[in-house]
Image (cartoon, rainbow, N blue to C red; front, side, top):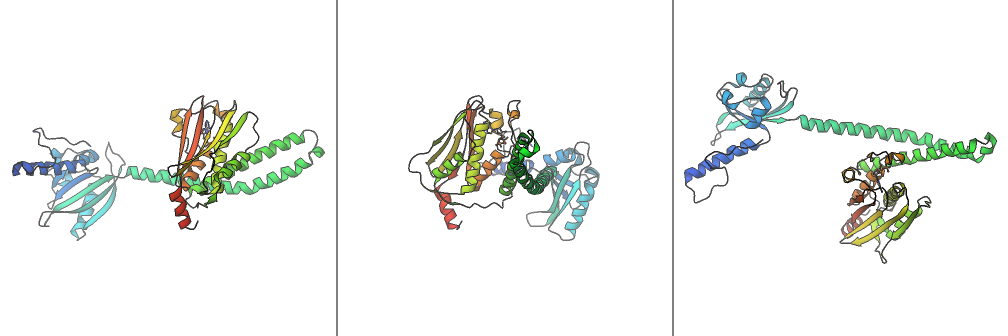
Length: 388
Ligand code: ADP
């Protein structure tokens, strides 16, 4: 809503002590007008006789009114029929000695058809506290309802994924164990059996990794995840992360760790998981190979872990969405790579669990650097104090 300034140049700005009193009073009155017009809700004042006393611009917009036509008129005649019963009910509540009263209403107007509004009513009093009428504040609630509906939907999706992941876990374990047994005796089933068992085994492993990612992410998202921080040798954690990767002949995996790194309070298992996701992505999205460097830096009360590759890179537009769960860059090129779109969401949660942040620097065609920055000393002492 915009506030119109009066044409004579007297604005509602702060009054100066050297100004004549009449001008100061006028300024104050304009300032109050401006405030009322700027409040992001519809305001309607009604006298004790039921006549409309004032309407602000937001109320004009909400109810499709023109104040020149409604001021001085009975509210029952001047306001839309879908709102007057609500005003009447609230007014009766105030007359029955309530200090304030609230109600919801659904508008039935061509422009705002079906709009949900919340109305709060209170007494309009003069300076001596004598009742002058009633004040109605009206807010558009559709937005907050939409947000709530989206939250509910998101929760439903999370619940479904949680149940599905748990239900998949047992049969998957049975399939993996069964295939391993069969593969050991593959010769019995003819020459085609061994490669077939290998395909089944690999697929089951991939599905298992996806289920583990979903369960891990949901645990991190639920807010139930606790940081199990311990005093860690960061260089060792970084080495373990690299050692846990599959052999990849086209890539050169490098560690860049300065000598004399301090021991740091981190959640070793979660950190290992996050670094593995970053390293696996660096391998996956560098199809032409090249150097991949896991670097650790300490400074300014924070520790930084980063993984740099010389892969396909990511456009600026997509960089903003990368950390959302299930987001995958949609190009014919990236669709060749398997993935769930959960890895970076997990990395972000792990960083947040440590009170830190994530970052990405990337240039399409030249490579990317993904990383986490975690607060160092402050967080560590907090954790020690909390006995974690
Ligand atoms: P995914 O399982 O798809 O790899 P992630 O959450 O780990 O899921 O990554 C999300 C998306 O971010 C990927 O689908 C990919 O498009 C992009 N991405 C992640 N890491 C890199 C990287 N190192 N280089 C280029 N793109 C990447």
